[in-house]
Length: 198
Picture 1: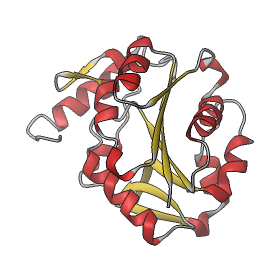
Picture 2: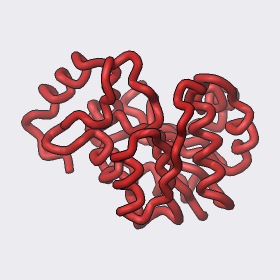
Picture 3: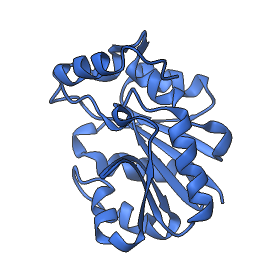
Picture 4: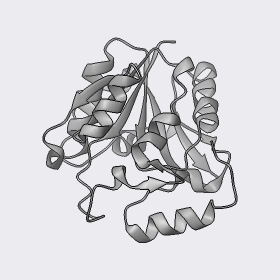
């Protein structure tokens, strides 16, 4: 299967109060943590959709397709469409979010390995009963993803096809945590302080 990856890094961080992608997590900017978690050796192409100049520059330096989203307030649906346009003709698309700095490449690689044995399924990263990101969609769902509007993401498509969803457990529970507030980032740093995650 040809699998493309879309790293969604175009949010305006309105709930956080500042651009959280530029903040440090364990010595690296959050957007760098996100890119480091991409298992590029298992992918055919990677697109980074962002309005953050630093993230776009880093994406290009890594050989990824850098896609500028200059209208982040249009919502995540615009990021999804821009990402799908950028990765082109693939059999499946892996969608990652850029504000899960504790996500590991090893866990994402496990999800992609599962895609090879469940090619028609929607695969979601999970831990125990909790489902989260990343999510890998087979191409047959691209039309529904493109039809999303506003700040509605791929979760709506996954919920519309519950029988197609399979879970892939992350190695650690904190990998699913995103950082929507300074307090969430502080708690994540405390939870992972003793671990070498990368």
